[in-house]
Image (tube, rainbow, N blue to C red; front, side, top):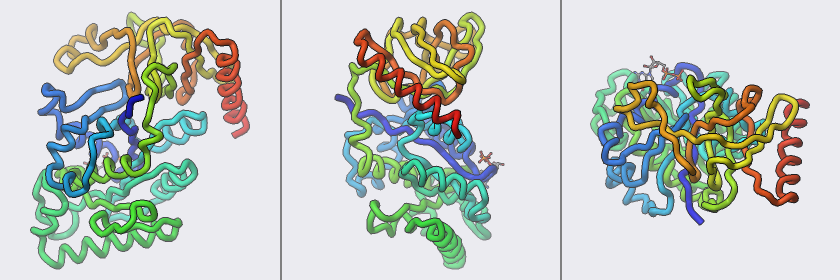
Length: 351
Ligand code: GDP
C-alpha cells in the first residue's frame, strides 16, 4: 500500500487566469528543481510535500497537516473541455479541482459550467479568487501569503475585497454551495473555501496549496491508497506522433504499476484495442531537453501517480480520454476489464 499524490485540475472561465496560475505554481519551485523541489511528468507537474512545507511554513503547521500525502500533482492542461470528455469516458482525471474566478469579473458562463461538472462528478474543489492585485488601490507584495498582504492594505481596499468575495459567496449559494473565505471556514465538510490570490504576483498561493493539502487529507486518503503491485489504471490525455517512436499516448497513471511489455486495453472510437507496451518514457531533466533527441528517458516501470508517454503498436485510433488498463493472464480479470471498457464505449456513443 502506498498513498499517492492527489491529481488536481484547474477549471474556470477563459482569461480568468488558469494558465498563469499553473505557471506560477511551477515557476515558484523551479529554483528548487535540482534539490528535488519539483518533478516534471508528461502532462503534469508534481510538487513534493517537503517543498510545499518549505514554501508554506507557518501556515501549514497551523493546519496540522500530516505527512501522509506525498505531494500535489497538477495536470498541466487547464480547462474543463478535457476534463468533461475524460470523465465521460470513465477516466479519473482529477481528485480535486481549483475553480478560478477573476474576482473583479465574478461568475461567467464557463465558471458555472465548470461548477456543474464538479457537482456532477462530486469532485471536491476550492475557489481561487484571482487577480486581487487589480483591485483598485491594492499594494502588491509579490510571493507573500494572502494573510500578510491583506494586513498591509488600506481599510477601503480590504472592504472592497471582502465585498467582492461576498458576491462570489452569493453566486455559489445560488448554485447550491455554502462557501466562506478560507480563514473563516468552520466546516470543510459543508463549506467551500475561497482563497483570494494573484496568479501574477503569487500572493495567496501559499494558502491555496495549503488548503489543497488540507482538503486532500480530509477527504481523499482512501481514494489515494494504491497498491504498488496492482495492474496499472490510467487515463489517456493525448495521442501524438513522435519522431523515432511512432504513435504514442500521453497517459496519467493513477493506480498500480505499469511495466514494459504489459498487455494493455484501450478505447478506440467504436471498439477496444489490446496491445503491448513497447516503451515507457519520462521527460528528461530540463537541461537535456534542449537536445530534442534526448527529450525522453526510457524506464522499465512506473508507479502511480505518474504522467508518462507510452509507445506501443496500433495506437493510431486511440481516443483521448480513453481509460487504460493493464490486463494480466487471468481470463476472468481480462473479461471483466474488457466488459468495463465496452460499457464505457457504449455509454459514450449514447451521449
Ligand atoms: P486562462 O485563459 O484562464 O488560462 O487565463 P490566462 O492565464 O491566460 O490569463 C489571462 C490574462 O490575465 C493574461 O493576460 C494574464 O497575464 C492575466 N492574468 C492572469 N492572472 C492574473 C493576475 O492575478 N493578475 C493580473 N493583473 N493579471 C492576471
